[in-house]
Length: 487
Image (cartoon, rainbow, N blue to C red; front, side, top):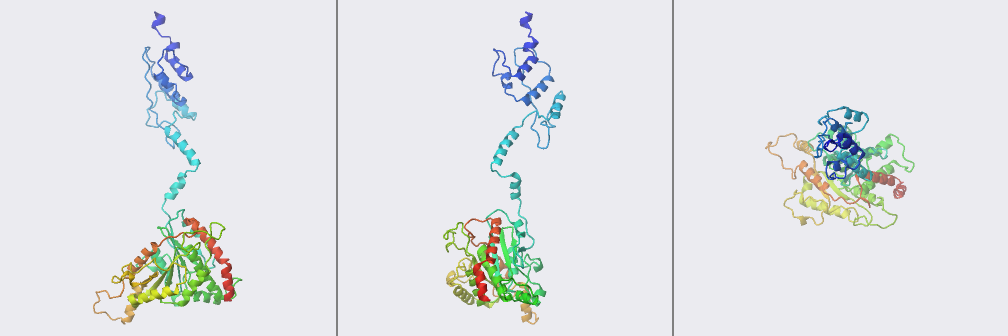
């Protein structure tokens, strides 16, 4: 009776159960394999240790036929910065020596599920996934430029300072400008990029001519200046083409000419052709600014630069290829003729039509896209004119003088006398300067962004592509031969 009525501690007691669970020995033949002992056979070793500690803190189970209840685990996953797998919110065991010993030995009581998943993500990241640090950097807003920087300095050398403002994305627009000295190129580019007519001109991103420079007939810009907006539009401001002040500076300061040039005026003209040919290759839009209509020599200069423009680099060494343009493998940008400081008479519809006919006649044989993409009639500047009033509408836009300059001109014309209706605005014959600049900006930014080369370029790729084009322009055999003919 004593042998059958009392269980032997060594066979069925808690000590035996613990040894069988640690050694993973199978239970007695009559034991239910779907019970708690069957579940405990697949418990990880770290969890077994914790259950073992919690088991020791409880009294021994009564000797009965009912299975022992499974202990409740209150262990939470380890925090990233902590070393212990038990958080302060977890209920401490009755005997704290076991957890302390495990922490001292560098073991963790349990293996959190999210760490197992992270290991899987780590293997995926090693096979080509994006690094979280790099991904976070790409999500940061681009750095905003406060002023323009040099892309090409006054010595016609390439500068790399613009690289830090560029990103790895392809949705960009490149706008360049050409024009004679004093036509207002830097002012126009500042108003199209980041400034408003009401701001102080000394705060413009492209520095305009100061009064001192105007009085001595000098030029403000030299080389090529670079500025990129938050909307990822790259603006390139250039030194004046065929500039007399640059020629005067070369002669009076006895500056050394490069060995391939013999005369200063040849060097100045070749500098201008290099800049124009460069813009015709790397820009989506080129704005030609003039302050009176019109200089025939300027159109001859544009056609010469188009003739000496470097060929579009091909993706292969074959002579034929498709670039997506209508002119075969050669790329040509959109060109806009901007009539700055236009008078009231030039806003007359009949005068505007004559100007369109003249520009169309002068650019007939050009491959530059000089018509069909910009319209003054679509801007509602002439509300009474139909679209078919201009037979072939070229990319011509008129801007009047700025309000401050216009008011000074009116004051000089009126000899300082007060008009009869001083509270009413005077009739100008055209919309305000600010509204016209806004209409011009909206149309320029809406220009089609054709593919510059045979491959799609990101901003950083465009920078390397432009550097290669500039180096090719300076070493161009066609430009060297043309320079030899001018000497």
